Image (cartoon, rainbow, N blue to C red; front, top):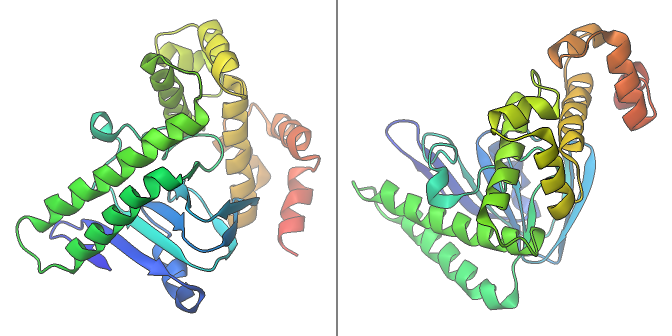
Length: 277
């Protein structure tokens, strides 16, 4: 099911089974996507990382992710573009920036509990019904309301499942804002101090916050994001290693090679060759 607005607004929602894989392949390359597994088990390789999700698990991906492979029984997929709903500009409404989308670490994932499953099922049914309605001046706003409701439910679950014990909303807000800023500036800003300055905090304050609440340091998040982009560029572009090193703000090609080998145990050249086989 697809809704297209007059100003390039786009919302896609559909159930996908293996026989309709063409939809999966064609419709997940742009915008933001919510992938809800309603089959027994689904497996993906996203940015070279294997991901397995059970029934009633949801993952969230952006146009920056690359799905290398997948195997599933049945999925429900929601995709929308920035003109339809911009999660950055409307962060105060939903609060998913840096959590469900535009986080700098791994692909976000949630598990819908039995207690919450009815709410999700009902919301999905209403969303599909509304997309099928005839177009009028209220349709897009209704679809936006339903999408926001869906995302708010997901954010609540994500916080409960990933930030256990964090009671201060300011702490969660700071972590997700850091994640978002890294996703936005990782090519040009490469130190914790760079982001601490933008957040009006000291690097030590950020380090203590991350140490208390999550299993990664602020520097790890930067490094993982730069490494991910390096892998993508080596696999999917014809850019030289020197150009990649320059684009990711390494001081020289040797510094880039040392960084890459330290984290993958392969040189950039060896990694590129391994991806072409």
